Amino acid sequence: MYVNDETRTLLKIMKFRAIGLWHGELMHNAATMESYSQLLHEPCDEDEFALRVGRLLLKSLQDGSTLGATLASRLCPEFASIFWAQLSDRLIGQQECDYKNFGIFRSSRATGQIRVAFEPSDVVLRGPFPNPCSPLPRPNCTSTITAVRSWTGKGSMFWIGRILARSRNGGCH
Amino acid sequence: MDWPDFGPFQEWWLPLTITTLLAGALDDVLQTVGASEQVLKLVQERPQVLEHGRDWLSILSMATSYASYYAWANAFGTVLEIGSAIEVDGIGRFHKAQGRIEFEAHTKFQNLLDVNIPLARQFAA
Image (cartoon, rainbow over all chains, first blue to last red; front, side):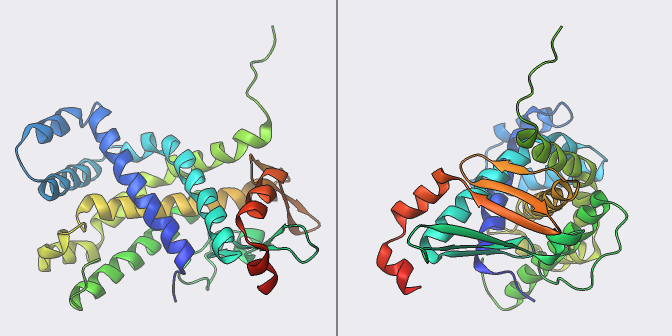
């Protein structure tokens, strides 16, 4: 059960983009702009500020806000730009990019000219998308929205579990 | 009166599908992560873990990243499944035919790789 380098890199870069987008959302959303503005004016260091913003985001979600729905339209172009840029970098450096449970891109010059082949993953080819960490068993999903909801929760839990494990082992990233 | 020009169907259908998936799922995903026993236990028992970049903002942003990944892949499969091609500017064209997903790289993408991948390394691979 693992996430390979290219998939992990993609997720991590997107995480940092998402942090920036969340700051923007909290700053401009009518439900949170006042609280966020207060945080901006409270003296604290960078780490403490991040902790406070995180607590504000969590509290807003627990209070039933729909920040995610408004953020949704900004996530796709960000993700797409990272996805294709990482693919290009990976093909240039390694000639292969295996996005877990999405598919494998390979470049070759077998006939003298550069060719790019794509081998889709079984799940992208045939149906709902499972956790990249554990492709089986396939989920019994009635809709793709349910699939996203179900598998993202599990994927996030997997990631948080890794943080916990590293924390217990004394790691720091 | 003419219809407004939304541009080629292949360019906006995929982003629209992804956005729809995320708009429908992201709040639930984040609330699930924020309310999960595992995370709450983490906060109660090991508050020091919420330091050094492991704050709630990082955790929820990672969940956002995962959600984007799943929405992207799900949307990709869904759009191809209903028979539409996906045209990615500067990369290539994906389409499904006879149960297979075909990919045709754009010349621009091939040229980018051609210039940046040394001949020797490519033949060696």
